[in-house]
Length: 73
Image (tube, rainbow, N blue to C red; front, top):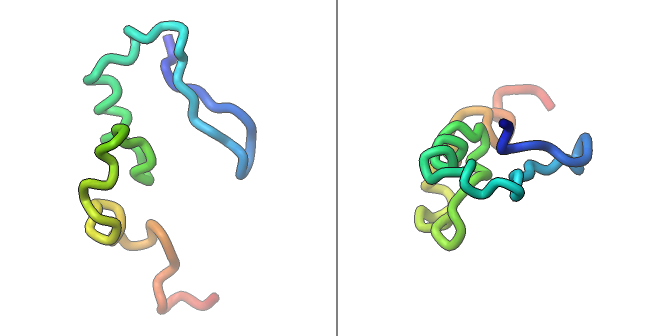
């Protein structure tokens, strides 16, 4: 049973949650999804910005947000 799915395509793609079975999304499953999200976009409501922007885990990973200055544009 898949809990997460996608709607739309391209730049309009969105991750959705199967709301028909709320018990399928346990706290552990939700935490795993947050842990493996490659861009840090899955966060808990009202707690997502406890760590200020610029100090979050993925804010300083090389190549995550912009090209390095050595690369030609």
